[in-house]
Image 1 (tube, rainbow, N blue to C red):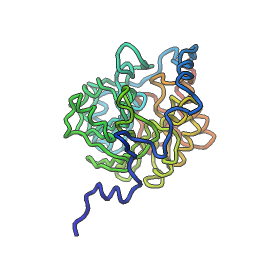
Image 2: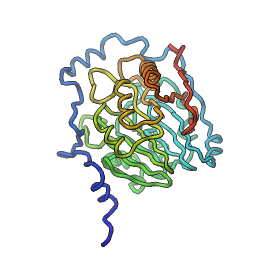
Image 3: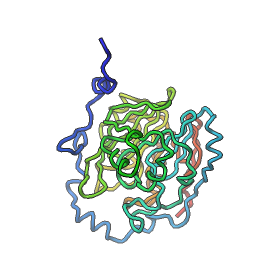
Image 4: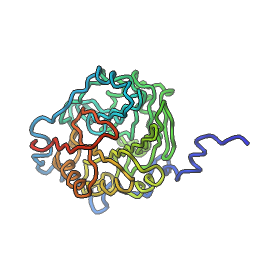
Amino acid sequence: MSQPPHYLNLMIDQPKPAPLRNGRFHNDPPAPHLDEGNSHLKMLGKFLSPRNKNAVPAGGIPVVPVLPAELEARRNVSETHLYRLGHSTILMKFGADYWLTDPVFSNRASPVRWAGPKRFHAAPMTVDDLPTLKGVILSHNHYDHLDKPTIKRLAHKVERFITPLGLGKYLQNWGVPASKITELDWWQSHGHGSLNITATPSQHFSGRGLRDTNKSLWASFVLRHKGARIFFGSDSGYFDGFAKIGAAHGPFDLTLLECGAYDDLWPHMHMTPPQMMQAFHDLGGGTLMPIHNGTFRLAFHTWKNPLERISELADSHGTPLLTPHFGECVTLGAPVQPNPWWEGLR
């Protein structure tokens, strides 16, 4: 008897796909966008209240320049390398192939160039200096993760875009050929080059305007390369999905989890540092690398608060913590050394 298609195996062997009702995706289990005890008026009032003077760095943030010649020289090195370029933008080298997550190189995470969250620091390299990319992994369509100008400028350098369901239409509208795009539902996998990518659940939402809320999916990703496993968490509130992902795909050598943009007004959409630490343990996380901080102001806490709190928690839990400078080369499996680069900055 002939074998069933690969995607059918995935649906048989793995938990259920993302709920889709009336053309919109939903969290599983359901989660409100805002705490039911809070209103949009309360949120507006908080935004209009006096700003925390430490929400934005008073001076510069240290950045290590990433040089194209350095990247090309490392293509022939067998180790897996990672460079945090800002927010959730991570350049990863698997074998001789470079991959990029949620690329945002614009000065603002916004639909316009003159308003919206502005970068605290320059990117360690430009889009033009990026190497040829085997692939780009996109987690969802919010402006701090899906940046139209960046996509349009780097599309010719990318062999394959991996996205959740429904996100590919944005790329096609910006000139990316459909033949370059692979959309995945939760728990579906795709192999490209030497990397195997599985889209896994997160608890979040999508939308870039008033009419497209939840019309495309959001996801986290499991990355496998020659026995090594990396979890790219993107945006998520804390939920039981982390334990399910850990049971199905863990343990992980390196876990990249969002640590920033949390607030009690939206407790179901972004994790606090204690919740992040619990998610890390649910996943079987190995080494923890906090992302989604240090680049844009997206909440009311101080810019250093996520890094300070997760460092304290990691120390108390005995958790290996990677906090590299933006642009610093990290080698997967190398000894982890403390690097509180934010200390002394205002």
